[in-house]
Amino acid sequence: LISYHKFKERASLEKILEELLLGKQLGLISDAGTPCINDPGQILIAACQERGIAVSAIPGPCSLIQALVLSGFDTSRFQFIGFLPKKPAAVLRQAMAYPGITVAFESPERLLATLSLIDPEREVAVAREMTKTFEECRKAKAKELLAHFKAHSPRGEIVLMISEGAPPDDLSLEELVAMLQELHGLSLKEAIKQAARFKDVPKRDVYKKFHS
Image (cartoon, rainbow, N blue to C red; front, side, top):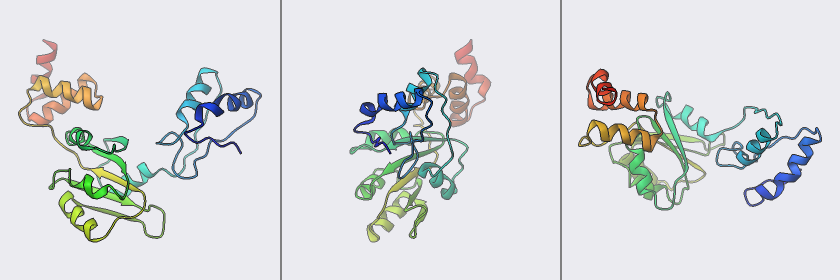
């Protein structure tokens, strides 16, 4: 076994690559979660690709996907933003405008403070202790979840899911399309489609503004 945690990810890289180039088969395993999903692995995979070393992925436990399945939300579009920062207000404001589910990791100690920053009427799901004895996925309005977890102190690792949002009404079509591209990485075509939906106008009218 070779330890490969985040504090020695680069230090272990060359030794691992040497073993692989000698023809050995190695497996990268997380003791909890999935490699590369807020766990080490991306640097190693990229290095293998650069050197022509074949990489294969075997499906396994992933709290991101597990939580989405348990939530009951429409999962046709979602974004994963990893662990929320200690001051998440700005990140959450952006998430409020995302046209799909926003998924984030949060600690039980900070869950109440985070829920208090979300629109009280927004539907949110909190999944915790997944695959364990006290597994729970609770979905309700943010204000209802805040009241619940004030009365029942949350424990375990938290996956927070925020329902589909909409951008502010006072944005122009041009500003809205730009925001969808910059904040959420949508292509121009997809941003135009979503902007038309938010503004409730025909897509062709929005296309004309950008392709005239």
